[in-house]
Amino acid sequence: MGVVNVTPDSFSDGGEFLDPERAIEHGLALVAQGADLLDVGGESTRPGAQPLAPAEETRRVLPVVAGLATRAGVPISIDTLHAEVARAALEAGATIVNDVSAGRADERMLAVVAERGAGFVAMHMQGSPRDMQRAPHYADVVAEVREFLAQRLEAALAAGVPRERIWLDPGIGFGKTLEHNLALLRGLRRLAELGAPLLVGVSRKSFVAAIEERAGLPRSAPLERAGGTLAASLWAAREGAAILRVHEVAPLRQALAVEAALAEGAGG
Image 1 (tube, rainbow, N blue to C red):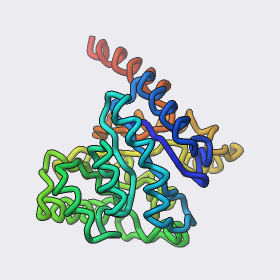
Image 2: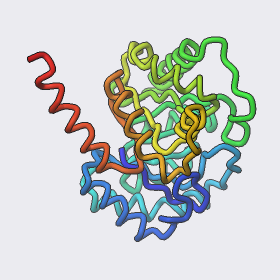
Image 3: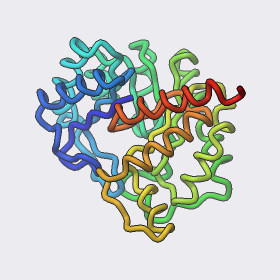
């Protein structure tokens, strides 16, 4: 899943693709590199981010979704908390809703998804983007995230979303410390037991810099975390992730191809 941020304040590439045509060209480039689907977002959910009015979010994403839906040749996902934005994006050609609140922020969301026959990504987040990193706490992060995802899976099913169209996301970096993130990545197989495909997004996230710091290395900026992104993405794929959400598609495609080639002869 290639990331297309249409925001001025994303943690990783804020403002770079705010112009709709530039965002569309970026999405097309990601597809050319091997993206199987694209995730378009108009509201930053970085730690400390402030809410955005749905009307402004719609204004940002709609031309990009419409352009990619007609030109990209792959499914388009809309990354939003708001049912109003989701409905407009689905009407413009998106077929998946990626909701970091798992349908809790807007009580109309699941009904919109079901009504439109769309796919749905339910992600775990402790708190909200404004406060999620202030003091995240869990007694058992894997068990608690698993229980939350199980509940949201049932909520989506009860709303009429078909099971085969629901994906679950543990929400790496969303209300988690470094240790929480590592525990979730190590525990992906337990989450996969829920029976829905797992979507995992580790791309450019700050836990990579936290690992560097712990190892005595300088903390990298978001655009300098390609190595950590690849390592964590490959791990996630081995541990059961079905969809990997990344900013840089080509390096991951290359890494997956090399790993697959090596695995072919591993038992010989």
